[in-house]
Length: 80
Image 1: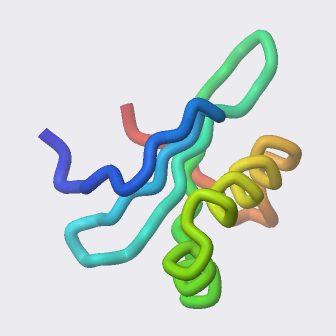
Image 2 (image 1 turned 180 degrees about the vertical axis):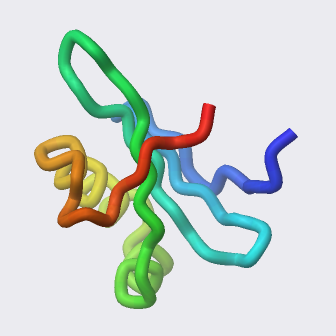
């Protein structure tokens, strides 16, 4: 059982999670023929934007991660 709470699950193949420490992360399915999940921990500004805009912000961030999975070196492969 995971220590994370799913705050938002989207049909766009991502979900926003709150960890035990309260930090938010976004987990996104990326790839073409081979698909895998990457996770990016939201920084303070992104967390504030998510709290203010909700799904609209998460959709934009997920699309940015799908377009560039390394996401500036911030993404990590999600644990299975």
